[in-house]
Image: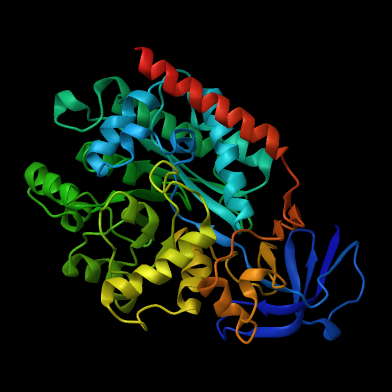
Length: 457
């Protein structure tokens, strides 16, 4: 087993129950697990690998991304979709997404993961719900495993097309028996419920306007037959979403979720911008989680989720960058800063969200939403997932009287070091597990190809 020592940390943010922030801290790792955390003077002075941060960096747990659509990295800033709300945005992009192939799934997954890692993310959940041509979730899993990110892969699905009153075109939906069979295959092939697992599976029918109530119920039953398989979907994203739920099911979104068995500690819903007060209280009582995606919600003019109200009701809340065609970026540090700012705007209250509050959402909040008790905190026995950011940069000048708050108040574009499962995946700002310029070129070429095919059809 190998050992790693990271020492002389300017500020070590532990995110433990006492919320300790240590000056001149250090972390000692054996293999992929943290063995000791404390002052540099109190920890071992040697290891197989030593990183001396020379009292210039702040170190904190790796950030957790709880909602994304990696494939959408290939359709950022499409001109026809730039000024659309959710439903019009979707109907504009469906014809382009119909051209996605397994190669595109692989390229987009690596591109999205690279962007997330460079912005401090060490664990991500992705929601792939579209499977045209030769696409499978296997391609995404293989791509993320190669880049080295801790991953929760969601087997998304759409089964209700336009002919049945749904939003997606019939050509992009699947038969429900095929969805369930593939879901079972993926769970049994890939799901790892062990502590420190690098890959876990989620079942994720896409949304109320693209799947049946039966599929929601059957997916829930299947997930709950396996230890640690969780449930995820979109809910109450905007007012049109609420209107569809009322017109189709006679229920507001929160009651719809309850009616199909989608409340509980093993469930989290994306967005919840238009969730009712009664539903928020139900989420809190049942431990149902929320993935808060402020940039996407602003970009699509969906509104601002009432996060402070959710937290007051003890709703588990994590952050999500959402699909990179509705953000249009995958920077989790930027998402945290946006969540911090919009919470204050929504409530017209400068105390509605503090910098430390939003750092909790980005770390231990996301870990709770994903059902993890081994990430989000820097303490003995926890996974060795952490990031380091150099404080000697222009954006932190004049802010070192509170470097922890400065992470959120002052714009931070990227991290200088990232360790995932004890492995250094970012070294002095450079991703070590993939040739980034080559990957960017592949993504750009594939994106042009997808759009060109859609235009010529």
